[in-house]
Amino acid sequence: MTAAASSAEVLRAPLVVEFPFTRSLGPVQSAFLTALRERVVLGVRTSDGRVMVPPVEYDPRTAEEIRDLVEVGATGTVTTWAWNGAPRPHQPLDTPFAWVLVKLDGADTAILHALDAPGPEAVRSGMRVRVRWAAERTGAITDIACFEPGDEGGEEPDAPGQGAAYDGRFGDAVTGIVAEARLDYTYSPGRAQTAYINALSERKTVGERCPSCHKVYVPPRGACPTCGVATTDRVEVGPAGTVTTYCIVNIKAKGLDIEVPYVYAHIALDSAGLALHGRIGGIPYDQVRMGLRVEPVWTEGGRYPDHYRPTGEPDADYDAYKELI
Image (cartoon, rainbow, N blue to C red; front, side):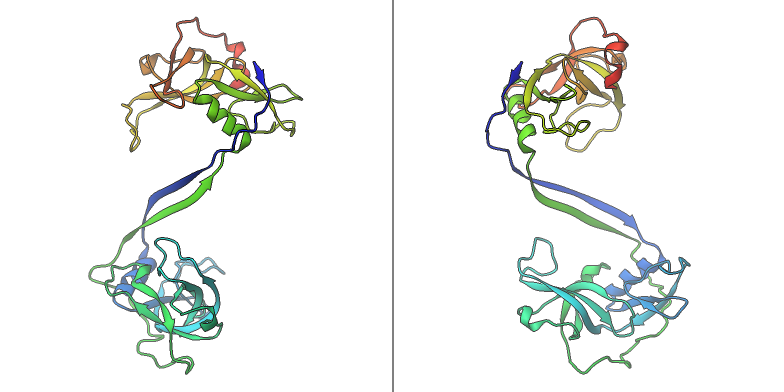
């Protein structure tokens, strides 16, 4: 079955990808974050005498291990900046601010953070700033709430503790952090996959045929990756297909109401030029095999197959699907 490409509106939807990233801290990062909790900023001195803030555990020039912690000032100089007129959720400030690189007094490198300023006209490279500490500190970079404009008198070489060695020993050191990674964006599947998704809602699986090599891509990509030409002829495939390869899943995914173990497989639908993914049900997991003939199972109101189950047909010959593994 072939159908001409329609002018249906291309789908778009907001998408959020987020996960908590948990990491342990080495002795240098542990000392740096724990010191922030105590309103102290630490750097690390390299073998050639440079002081790096934030501190690192290995010299970026020589790759040697470095552990010589030193205290630097809570004041510094802006080296460069960019204005953020529309802060996003969870950024340091909820009003417009400047992202700044600040070289703290006693440091040779700059630290990135927010500067609370009334507008871009109040920010410039070379301006003096100071740390504004958070009211409640837990041993995180957010213990520096932001920077704020400071006195313009220049560097304070005699600031308390500046340049002094620091042993990095604390009674209740921070040993690990959890960073909440999040990405918000608007996703569009494009013309070809919009048609594929719309067809699924009608319980049809539609791919697109390459006019050169005649392979039918499911899901369609809008172009043939082999020939590099656009694909516009739509072809309904399946609904039945053949299991080409599979794996047994033994770990339950969060938010997925499926009992383990279960089987996830590559399924080559009839007339398709490559296999797609699908869960196999209606059969014990240890009876799934390559060549098994399966068909889609739709739930009431579902916009895509819930899983695939055996059709009862004889298994497909290996030669019939070996090119699709």
